[in-house]
Length: 287
Image (tube, rainbow, N blue to C red; front, side, top):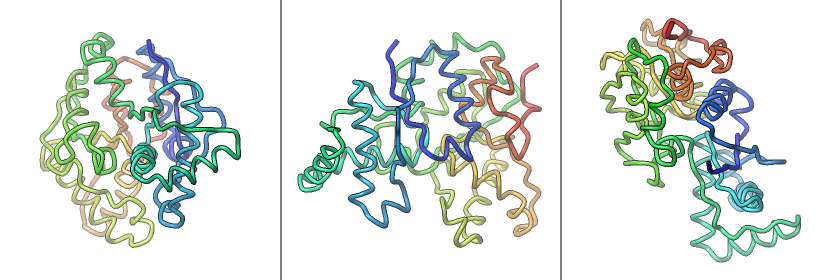
């Protein structure tokens, strides 16, 4: 089995602990070998990128230089981290001046980066590297009660389209169906959740998330599966505020796709971070 350099990023170590817990539990179940990057730093995403683009790219390059030093592909579960790493690789290839600045900065701390590190999301490892037949082999408790709206968010498929179709991706749909869950048709699967906008212009963020949950319910879903920490946070933590604003009655479980996989594999609730949910999904847990 191939080994991967694991870059968790800040969110997965903070508000998205359930994501990391379930991801690593699934890695272990599938025999995927990972090693957390030693001394990794912030990817420089979002806000930092808007303040100083060069420093943001340098921060991201340092993480890839650490992975390259170990000769491994880097796996980033957070969509923002994934996007910034991909963007950094792209910009280094396209802009020689930026490449030279980054080269000098890394050299001053004893590192170098050739640009060859491959960046992957866990979805790509599960579906492309392992294959769905191997995933199916680990299913012990098919999820017959779950009707899932697969929500990808925007960052994993745009502007870089290595993972899947940028408008209507289906890679997570296939993965969830392979473990026995029912996946509903969900046309807003790549529509933005508002990102950090919910923390600045709350009413706009609430509107965006109201649309996502309402559409899932209309389509017959009883839960939403996500792969981004910020999407999960926006969709779950603001449901009470959404209900007040729109006089709705949402109580929709928002699960990381790795939690759903772990449930199908029969892994323990504790190992999947199920207790961390604001909206409980434990009633789906297979007996």
